Image (cartoon, rainbow, N blue to C red; front, side, top):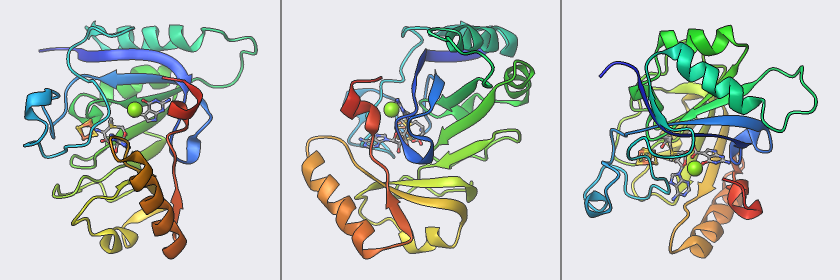
Amino acid sequence: MAGYAVKEMFLTLQGEGLQAGRRAVFIRFAGCNLWSGREQDRAGADCTFCDTDFVGTDGDGGGRYADGGALADAALGLWGEWLEEPGAPPFAVLTGGEPTLQVDEALIAALKARGFELAIETNGTRPVPDGIDWICVSPKAGNEVVQRSGDELKLVWPQPGVDFKAMEAWDFTHLLIQPMDGNSAVDTRNSAIKFVLTHPRWRLSVQTHKLVGLR
Ligand SMILES: C[S@@+](CC[C@H](N)C(=O)[O-])C[C@H]1O[C@@H](n2cnc3c(N)ncnc32)[C@H](O)[C@@H]1O
Ligand SMILES: Nc1nc2[nH]cc(C(=O)O)c2c(=O)[nH]1
Ligand code: SF4
Ligand SMILES: [Mg+2]
């Protein structure tokens, strides 16, 4: 189907990684190549620990956008919410679901034409198109990463069988370990802290939005 399927779009602060704390419009695309998003399929999926609902287009600011211009106009409208000091360039985070299934040249051009600086959150199984200013790749064990360069590699931890040593040779500026949220959050946090204490090239990324009650 033509156009873009967006689950939700909202103004918040980037919660994760090196850009944590930064004001951002989040554009969450519907659908993922590693999980259907249905709970009954989770255990058998290629990615089993997802913390996100990316099914459908029914969230706040969600919908089917006919073209890049319509989506970019909506994103710019959200950037204007609350704004008292205009002048700083608008910033958008493309996420999902898996944004590389939908983000294309036309959408990037439309967002750039409105002044947006762009970040992407991707599982790395598909190449990121040109024109993105900040690339965050988050590998999922058992799924080949083809996008082996970028600004930050954010490994959710622990993931049995993941080859973090191989990742150290990829072309990323920052290497991050992010505790896996879920039923064992205390254990995964301790495991992530121990990993960073024993592997100095990596640093800890905490999901700060969850701590401060942001989306
Ligand atoms: C929901 S994903 C969407 C983007 C893309 N599909 C990906 O996986 O990178 C956004 C970020 O949340 C992370 N994430 C998902 N589930 C998580 C969990 N249970 N605990 C910690 N981080 C999680 C992902 O690894 C990714 O960095
Ligand atoms: N505030 C906030 N920061 C985030 N960083 C990455 C997120 C994502 O789901 O991609 C996310 C999210 O869902 N909310
Ligand atoms: S790849 Fe990303 S969006 Fe897809 S299921 Fe895993 S964490 Fe969720
Ligand atoms: Mg999230």
